[in-house]
Image 1 (cartoon, rainbow, N blue to C red):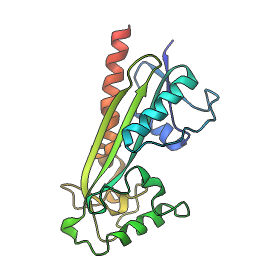
Image 2: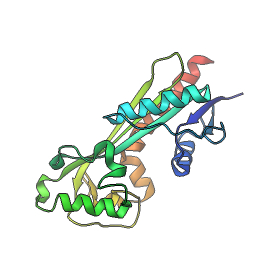
Image 3: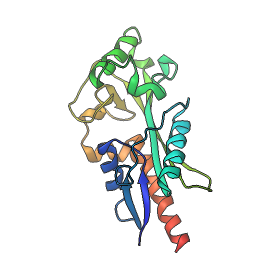
Length: 202
């Protein structure tokens, strides 16, 4: 019987994304709901790594099995690395994705294009009780454009142009985005680690 791997997120979209990315590995990918876990772990860390570790270790203990969690966001150099770990709450709780995107553009209104360097960062943590937590980091460097472009993706994708690209993340296909995205890079590392771990344990 395959070893369970708990995806430590209440977000159904994120659960599906990880399940798809980890398909073919000798693990039974399970959700928090399938484990009967309704608790929410507060993201009190000051870095993406701290938040990912907090969630992975807490849910590994709750589920009694291997648990995978991630934390990700956007860092803008002209804003001192903000919004960073506050990416999902930037500008206040009353804003949706579009509102946060426009709030960010307002903060950069006086910043010229050549000073709008930024990066998407994703850190994945895989935890198991009694063992060191494994960490995997993916970074997608780029810049913040002057106005939103594209209808794909979500969050800050319409204003983020990856390094070497003339299109924003929201103008890329799903496959193109996955190949260069911060999450795609971190998932690839995590998948390789999980595959090696499974071989060692056989």
